[in-house]
Image (tube, rainbow, N blue to C red; front, top):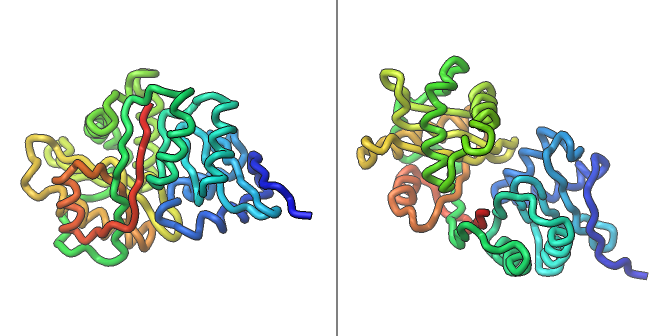
Length: 280
């Protein structure tokens, strides 16, 4: 007798099976893989639940349900099951993010109950670089030192506010956000070009696995934009990442951000997929 599909919250006994699923697409699923590898599947450590969708007793897709709602390898039937679960629990996330087809399908099912979204970004090219950059790296871009967290922080806040549309300092005065920035610095995953105590370029690696890492928070001081700092800075970031973090470097970017897309392509990034993001 065939068993009906089942959705349930994964626990530590499912870790190996989930990691094998995530390893099917290490670039697309770098965020969830990085979180699970670092924190496991205990919700109190992970800061999220991971819902598993099982067919015939086998895990075939998943959904990370925390501050972000992130579908993993999810087809139409799994997405319907995840939507039903999300609707029962209510909205606790600040965004839905992942492969565009899955995110937009999930949002179509959640929108009647969860609307309005603050913004829906329907097309964000997912790009990778798995070789050396095509341009010379900026020699001034380097890992941010632990004592420079407060030098980096204003640039990080400016980037977040510009990209997301709200300040990361709003909820608690910035304590949690500063702690996250400090964590990235301590892990050697924040790079910057710092001249006379000011950040001119920065980038961080928010998700890192053995297979791939993901660049986030790319920012150039507004007064210096258009001078090639992003291109040389990203070349430095790629070189650093491939030497110290993972062999494949990825990122996703808003399709309408033509200058950023052009800069990434000059460095050597190519598009391998499309993400979408729903912001609340």
